[in-house]
Length: 280
Image 1 (cartoon, one colour):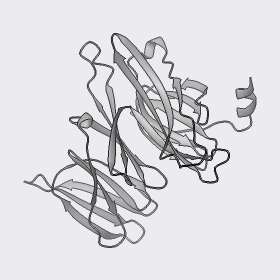
Image 2 (cartoon, rainbow, N blue to C red):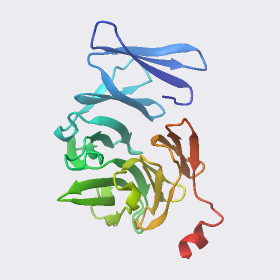
Image 3 (cartoon, rainbow, N blue to C red):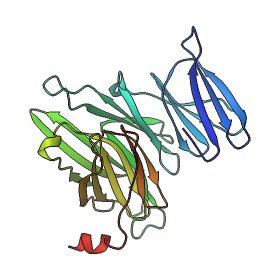
Image 4 (cartoon, rainbow, N blue to C red):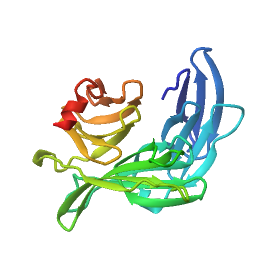
């Protein structure tokens, strides 16, 4: 896990259930700080250039690389994430909204279609909301008539209920500003081809450059939606091998993805043809 100059390591201490955390400055070839976590870290990632997000079986912590501070507990995991494999953790640009994503075995009658669970946490309200979701991402959006940007969350879910598979994309505003124009929530279908009925979203990236939502699935499908309207723009398979990691490519307005074969992919829109393509 990298920032511009720092790299972090997590190693279990022999004979204990503790994890030893260390952050190094690559340029200076020096250790910045270290800490012993009382319980194992099951997932971790840089959520900002200066903050490491740490997830244990019970809680979520933030650890700043600045100063001598230890990891700070942000919230406890909700019941819907018990025994889940954590696959992502993100914060919004204001760091006031946090989202944790996990996956669990699917329904007995369709075990291949894994279940996605999401915990949305408000730092200001100190309150969590449990939802079904496989992938989520935050964005800022300027609603006409409101000089302050709105914080949006988009999330994708695919569920199996009463013998039916339902796949949806949602875009909603978080913490609507009193007396100001707000963003009207949007919903759209995710159309999976017949051969991909057990496929599911594993990542979502939002292009702030183009205001597009990229939904990436386990089996390499890419869905592209307009952020403001949740209108489907494009769908194609970008990898024949399973995708397991993505990251925003902000300057290109797209995202990077790594598949099981070890290929690093860069996906973005063709700026010269996007308007005629959407118009047609």
